[in-house]
Length: 222
Image (tube, rainbow, N blue to C red; front, side, top):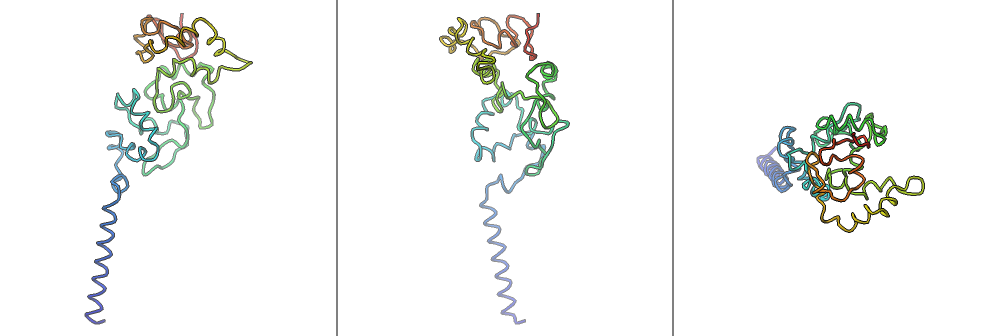
């Protein structure tokens, strides 16, 4: 092989390497710098990718109590015992919609109460029920759980018309008129009638108010 052929081959190889380097450098860091598990736990880096694909999910999370307390995506999406799992960009997460079993590691007392409720229906991945039916998936909101309309998603219709009965009651009429004056976000442990001076479904069936114990088994404690 002549010197000219070798020289041309070296130049072409160098050009290919340089081109690949420049193309890779232009890619978003979220694609080229896959973070380790410890870094995801510390920073919640999942949002960098999901904000481009599912902005509403990240926006709802940013408004949540979980975000305020530094709980990140990976801590909630890790598989609970009995759940199927999958690889997601190098991380093992639950291979299905999250259930109460995923909330258990932080909310054990609430989980045990929920076990005895009618809301805790068996699910297909080995755990029970879902907290997000009332609290929503990423806002994890106590305010949304206190809304009569949230309960009305299931408790409606001719066979169990609780939401219609509530809306036509004095409580329902007053709630519709004064909802904006209520402190629906109040801490359950410190909730008083100054915060919720109009009762909703949760006031009687779940919420602790004026020192009455909180429960997730749909029955007020004596």
